Amino acid sequence: MKYDVCVFGGCALDMIYYQNSDGTYNDEPTIKEPGGKGANQAVAASRAGAKTTIISRVGNDEIGKSIIENLLLNRVDVSNVEIIDGIQNDYSKIRIRVKDKDNEIERFSGAINTFTPDMVDKYSEVLLNSAIIVCQLKIPKETTERLINFCHKHNKVLILTPCRPEKLSITDKANKKLLDKITLITCNEKECKTIFNTDNIETCIEKYPNKLIVTLGNEGLIYHNGKRVVKMSSINVEVIDTIGAGDTLNGNLVAFLSKGVDLQHALRKAMYAATMKLQVKSAQKGMPYYNELEEFIFRKRNKNFSYSEELDFAISIVKEAYNQIKENTNFRIFSKEDNTLVTDIDIAIEKFLIKNIKKKFKKDVFLTEESFPDTNLQDRCWIIDPIDGTNHFIKGNPYWGIQLAFYDKGHTRFSIIYLPKLDEFYYAAENQGVYLNNNKILNIPVVPLNQTVVEFGGSVYKELDSKKIYFNKLIKQDKMLIGNILHINSCARSFTNLVSGKTDALIFATRKLWDIMPGMFLCEEAGIKVYALDFEKKLRLLTLNEELKNIILD
Image (cartoon, rainbow, N blue to C red; front, side):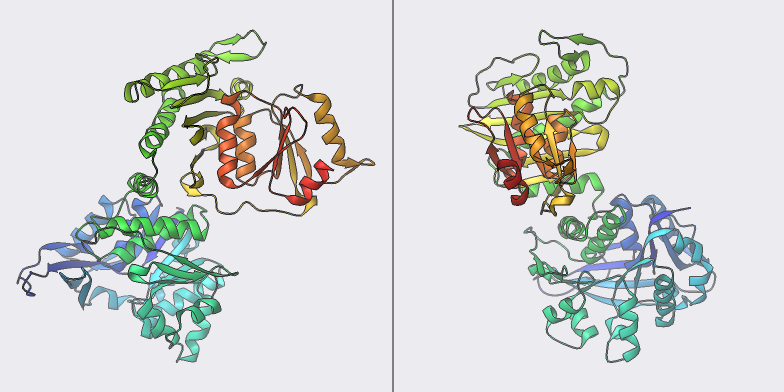
């Protein structure tokens, strides 16, 4: 069986005591629940959507059974958890302070001390069939060493959270070699200082780019991306309980990395997950499920956006519009007056969107391809293209999308392009950039000329003579000056190709607002420049690549 995440670590019973206003603690814990660093990270990763297993040991008693039941409840695979007679389960007394909501932990170790190096060999197939392995330093060091060496030998991604940092201190020269074999280390400031025997955090992260992540409490976190120091600020919320926040961050981080999310985006999403946990008592109760996290990120990110209500609603109904029709494979095709095609699915999506928007925003107006094509652009206007790329939709190609833009007081305020068959959901909000599947598009690459791709968008016949001029500029003496030329005839795909870096320039002639407003706004928020290619502005060029622009405009 293959797993996204394999946690190699301990489980425990958490007994949580909350400090009274007079500074005292009650004799009995407020909360008793399964926890432990390994189990917490496994639960966090599973809730974030990763297929997760844990290699662990528990004692054969009621506490051990409750630990197993809790893991199962959270859809963590427990087939690699050993239930051992005669060993005591780990437990922790965790005291939460009133003043700063931080915690002090008194640990009582049992089962975790029985982890042996031969467990690495015993579960080698599980480790080899896991995308990412996670470990801590709470298990005996010789077992951790065996795991580190195994993962390094087999080129497996290993992420370590050093909750016993003294075991990895570089004052022991042998530990320097171990550090080099670990893929990623996530630690807090105190742990970092202990491992590297220094107070200079920035010096540490510069020595270990894209490897050492240091959390700084209220200050966020810091790491080096190979080019510069990256500081990610914390997300401001009322803190109720800090216990489990680090485990939540790490569990979500590995879950997103296992799905192919880059380190910077994975860290930011993991920080949002940890923030959600901070607002809930106990370690695991506040660990978010993936859908909860996505909603939280969106609302938190856009809380100061003047049209956040409209944007939130638009995103939900665009997704719902697709859900309404995605099982419908029997559709009718009609020809319009201009000889273009429309299906009853186009009409159904448009009617669904208009109906739902009218219910919530009764006075708003619509400019749409099918129902309201002649509306003049005005305040609080919803521009809708229910299926852009209808020919692709009919043929079963994935290059079609649902497009929507919202216009008010002389400007586009947000736009959406949803390409459901490609599982790509783009949106842009005014002055907030462009997001793909809730991850901000940070840097559109500018590549050498021989790697560039120029796309000619819209229908081939529109402004064909002008297009030929620019086509010929890209070819000299039967030799291509660029990497490739592309034509798809789907504005939804063309604009999203550009903002996601799949192409490097777009030349198009389409002027219908429902075709171009959503995509043009994505490009505007991405910082992509627009150039007129003729006096009447029938043909336009969009690109960030100055060298490419100079060839086309020459």
